Length: 360
Ligand code: SAM
Ligand code: DTB
Ligand code: SF4
Image (cartoon, rainbow, N blue to C red; front, side, top):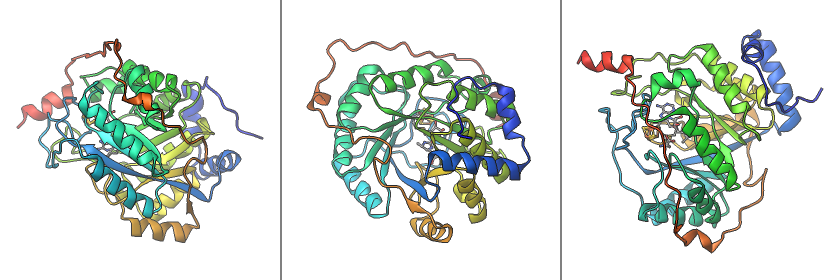
């Protein structure tokens, strides 16, 4: 029977899937995967951190927050030439998508954004899919990105609404959805998922999938990140999440969101080849490629090439699932009366962080 696209899952239904005997769960997910996707293809996407560190937000997992003392190298915005060079290397290594990340709370209509738009155009002209993850975004900013040739926008909901409050106090859960809505209005594809291993419950994981499944259409791409605990962040003492949980989460996402590409994202250096193979079996159809994510390590291109050969996988070609966006010169026009977004700032105290930093 064909798996249905459904937007009204209940938490209990999702928990029932997540808690199935593992072998059954993987088999069911693999079956759904074959109904909507080619199981031999895995998309490779390369991350480029175009602006690194110094972020004003307090996301407890993130080494780029200016509030925590981490050992990352901060960097101002890269030049378009640097991006072109890195994108060329990514293309030669088999990547069909480049995702440019900036450690910003939200996009501003300034010169830096103009430069990012040029980066988007440059990579699009290299015939790769272009994704950006720049924080919160207004509709007019999303439209300019689309006109410059952007294909996808990444904006993660990260966890359940309840647990979000334990992780971030500087922005609200609802603003994540507002940005996703703005992305959709501009005709961009949506990449949205989250992180496991932050101390959340299985119910939080199910609620996160429920929130993603309520979006209509479902996000085209759903990254499942395993927390990479980074020294200096509030979550630096978290245990590495068991690979079995990653497999369960990917399989459950696969069944709940049958036509989305599930992305096995951060945390692969913490996993064996066998563990990753189970994730592909359970329906992961995409990875981040290249020896660095944004600031933390990732398996090398050689290791991934070996893994692909071993498992009989091949990289997906660009624009397999959608049309190549047309570049419209209007992206150069700054909006005259741009909407002034009212992003929220809850500002509550996160007890875990208070206790942790009080000890020092
Ligand atoms: N500043 C933008 C934002 O937060 O929307 C974009 C960049 S942000 C680093 C992109 C995503 O990376 C986050 O939403 C989070 O899901 C993921 N991420 C960040 N640090 C991580 C970590 N230590 N382990 C796993 N995933 C992480
Ligand atoms: C996503 O969900 N994971 C990627 C991408 N989208 C931007 C980022 C992972 C970052 C891991 C921590 C780091 O390297 O800084
Ligand atoms: Fe900033 Fe994004 Fe990191 Fe949060 S996840 S601190 S918004 S870079």
